[in-house]
Length: 196
Image (cartoon, one colour):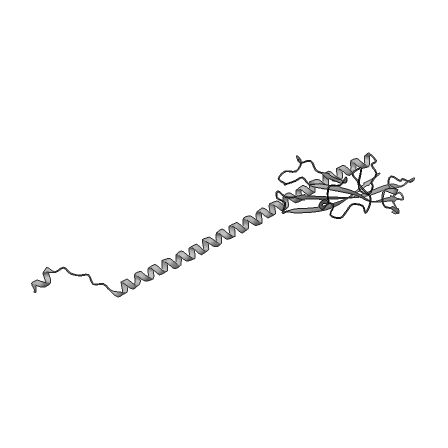
């Protein structure tokens, strides 16, 4: 045995396979980390878009509930006007437009006599209270149940009755409202028939 070999410390032999394996491990970890980050980012984006869709749906529900309430309030308002025998006219000075006199998209104009605000205590979660406008759209006189024999329009025929007949007065009620922000808006219309 050679003494010179024994006195010197042994050096560990390195293999090229182990060094190359450590490089592949690093690359594999980086690829996996990139995939996980991409998946997390897409999940966050999906969550944000779901939240936006949900928020818009809630806003649409709020605005439709508010204008539905405004239509109900408007129908009750018209019933009261009918009981009080208020006549319609072109300017809606008493709160009721005559046939054809309510402007299209009246809610975009300045406030008119015919526009009515719904009490803010009735509608929650909206930026401004909904409004409605009512219009008399016609009178029908029935001949006692066998059919309509006379069709009158406008305020000239309002309140006319004949023997054995029944008067049917038709009204159109339009409502307009906004959600909790001004971006979501809607309008709706209902028709009301009152008989005497």
